[in-house]
Amino acid sequence: MIYNRDRDRLLFCRRLSDPYEGKFNLVGGKIDTGEDHFHAAYRELQEETGITSADVMLTHMMDFTYYNQDCYVEIYAGVLKDEVELKPEKHPLHWLTLDEDFFDLERFAGEGNIGHMVQQVEIYGMGI
Image 1 (cartoon, rainbow, N blue to C red):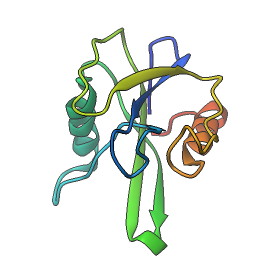
Image 2 (image 1 turned 30 degrees about the vertical axis):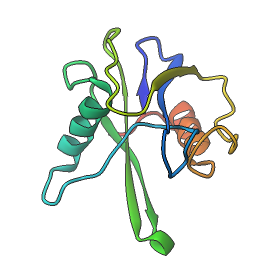
Image 3 (image 1 turned 180 degrees about the vertical axis):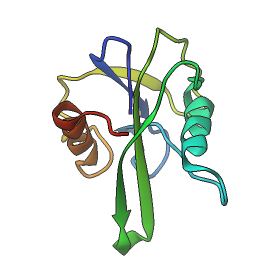
Image 4 (image 1 turned 135 degrees about the vertical axis):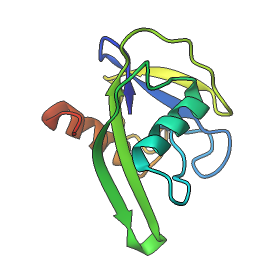
């Protein structure tokens, strides 16, 4: 979850392929075997957006384990230190304002998880 410097916009990609083709999703990727999880978060962020560790400090906010899908997801969040030039790898990138309905399943990926994550940041902060 990457917020702009003023914390009034959140960075999304619009998926060009399944899963969630055509929907907005947070940027992310996979952790390589043996890779440090924070390193993976920064690596994927840079690959997907061009944003580097010099541009943002990430915090580990939460995790989801989907036992029925054999899937584990780690969520990292951060606020940009300054404006950056985005460099999308594949999916187009968009800054969306925080007044969006992130629970809108027609527009957003994740079965409502994005709305839940945004609420968690608003109420409890970004983690450690």
